Amino acid sequence: MSAVLEVLPFHDNKVKLKDGQVHLMANLIHPSELYINLRDESLVITYRLYFNEPDLEKEETLSDKQKAILNCIYLRHYNGYIRERRLQGLIPTSEYWVIPFTTQLLGEYVYELLEGIDRHVNEQNIDLYQEFILENPNYWQKTASRMISYWNEYYRKRFLMLKQYLGYEIVQRIKKRKHNV
Image 1 (cartoon, rainbow, N blue to C red):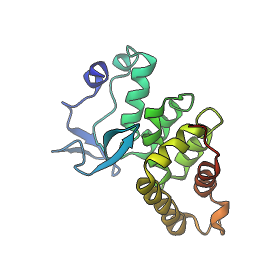
Image 2 (cartoon, rainbow, N blue to C red):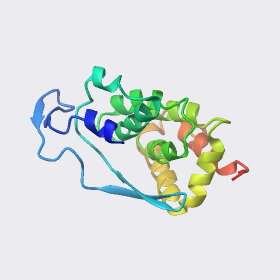
Image 3 (cartoon, one colour):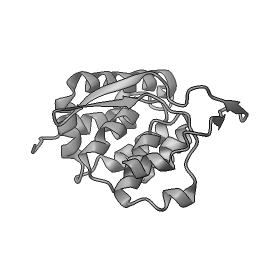
């Protein structure tokens, strides 16, 4: 984990935001946090982070597991394009500790993230998702409710019926899975 922390640019508080301008950020990590359980351990995940991506050369020195950790961290980035790109790097990953980070994306408004999650919720990983939702029922309910709210707000015209929305399909697939945990 220390190798991952070493490549994060905590020292650079000049961040290019959605408006295209570079801003000085007093706090690169949003104070809101998500609390979940992970096989009887408590995990706290920041809601959003604002620091820039690490230098690619430094990132390339990391092991595959360290890169997966880094990708999970950047799934909390404020920029949806960065979240989407980092999710692509996690699709082949089948580690239980990745599931809370990918599950959180189900309750966000960026549709393209759902397409990546759809590929991650596969035969290799679906039992891990099932285990996670059973371990975190309140968190899961809140995430599923947020997914429905975002469908209603942003995607209802495109997908007239909730059951046509990819987020709903993924949630149903996970809920209906007969788990082997």
